[in-house]
Length: 102
Image (cartoon, rainbow, N blue to C red; front, top):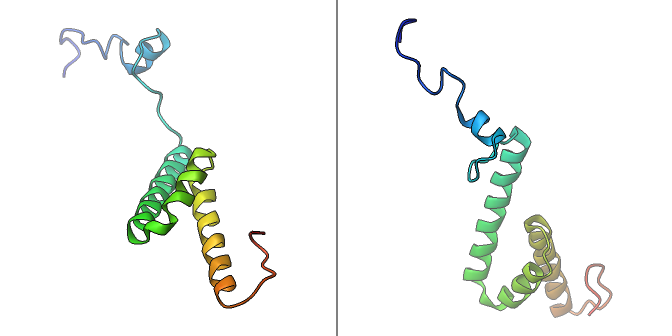
């Protein structure tokens, strides 16, 4: 585009940033790299939780309970690993576990 071309909305300053500042709904602000990384990590954890519930449906009620308690996905995954470890210790006869007092 040359200098003497007719003005466009972007060159006149009516882009997404201006629309957001003007209060137009439905347009979100750009995300920081930390927000993007956190979103990617939570997506990976959610995928892992879905695989766990699909592979071993016995754990589905526990995962649903933790979701209803509004735990973050990373905490749900850690709680699952802790509970599974406790269950395996109890199956082998250990009574004093460090994770979950049943």
